[in-house]
View 1 (cartoon, rainbow, N blue to C red):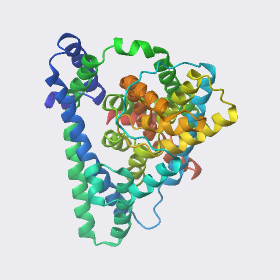
View 2 (cartoon, helix red, strand yellow; view 1 turned 60 degrees about the vertical axis):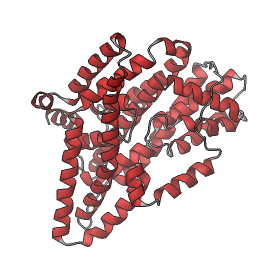
View 3 (cartoon, rainbow, N blue to C red; view 1 turned 30 degrees about the vertical axis):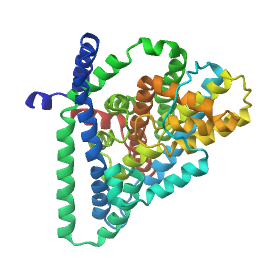
View 4 (cartoon, rainbow, N blue to C red; view 1 turned 90 degrees about the horizontal axis):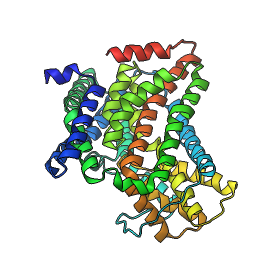
Length: 413
């Protein structure tokens, strides 16, 4: 444990990747190694909802009258970023059209049939039983009830607020203890990917993977930094690269934005951000900020249309951007969450549900790469836009914020 504590999170992950890859190639029959990944993911999944719920209540309860948060700016950035990501994917599909090899595979999951159904499920999910929300990891419901409890407890006595602070610190310490075991979890996750899927299973879908992943890289390394530069007028890459490295890499292997919430909250703390804002914006981003999902939905839908020889006019493509952006905000923060929204987008072009579900099957085949990169982009951008929103509001208020200095300080913590 002493050795682990001296290593940074990225160093731990690199060690886990190397060991997991070696074991996956040399002893793929040792399936028990994969249990390490299951234990790590399940532990984080179990504690993350409680952490989010307690943090939101504590942050709002401790908030003084008139204290400023940055949620309005964060929400606007989330919405714009998701739409821009979908628009970028549409242009990529026009520039680099690809066809999909459609395997006639059965997909057990049920896909939503309309946008109204998606939005209705989101609203109903937001008011579900709070105890059930903690056990099932429903973050919209946790946000809703956490905000209600937090606002009402602002008028509680000082002893009650002190208990909340102690409880929050206790849960955060448990999370940090779990994160110390990240190399063992990564060993199990990488081992399973290498042993079960390998490289051969992805060769037939190489062009599609290249298009999807390439678009996500372009959005993460060009589009989002450009948004940061426009808002802050500073070199965006120290912040964006820091977020991609510290948040994106863990999310790549966990393939769950929800699981990455504790890591993102710790990184917000290192960047010196306001807990009143990030305790709400990070779990909100795990559900609502889904640029990677919007890219997946748009590209897979347009690739299907191209495969079937369907001409897509730009007006319909623009509608697809809006649909993808809206639908992706309902994607849960779990692995493969965006794939089940592909049939909804395909219906815009009168593509049958049978074919659309075959495309979903393709998504699960390439998901070991596509979903990993998608989650990395989503999780890193949650952190980026939480920071950018706060820095932008401070800039408007006349305070200077040096991005590079904030990142340098974060690296030393």
